[in-house]
View 1 (cartoon, rainbow, N blue to C red):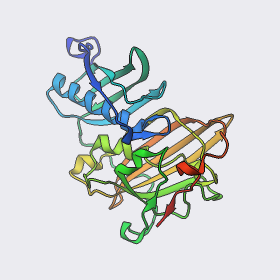
View 2: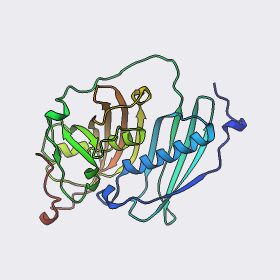
View 3: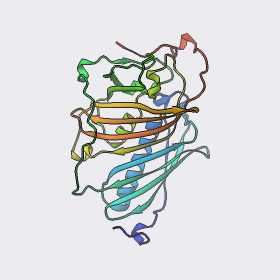
Length: 283
């Protein structure tokens, strides 16, 4: 068991980095939450490597979203809170012009021998080349241009389906093999699963996001396609709880996510000229 209180376990001096997120990575009124957490993850991983001298895999990351991040620079402060023999814990805080916008933490750990349990299998769906690409409307989900999304389940966003679940094959437009930071984006890439039941959009921003990682990435590079499922497990009183899962193309678990969302009031029918009232469709 790692001992707290040793010199090795003391918090390291904080690192400070500055980022900007251009509007191509926006979702609704600000930067896409998963992309912000991915930036924080990469920064913390660099801090952990610098502190421990080992490139430990991320095991879990959580983030609290305090307010939207716009195109202005924001400052990310990271701290390695603990660096033990087998695991490290790092935290981060982000502020834009002095106003807090994001904070969270992550656990990094070395692999070691242990029991194996695959958990729930990936759903059985057609392969990506048998699924039609999703044609996303312009405007509120600009970050979708960085992704290729092919619905693989029975439900589409804004289709008035009975079940609050969305399943899709997703890969990055640049065909990258997803690393841990990319997996965070994938875990937050699909709309809130309530969109499957709705017939017109309304904002449901994330208040908190947690992603737990499987060991598929530890086993080497994975293919560009990932299968992603988003499901609303509960909704009420203006809040929703969404669970997500990300698998490799051959069915190995990359990550499980959970997020709490605020479901905002319906703002009325959007202006048809901006395309926001058009439901996404497969083409």
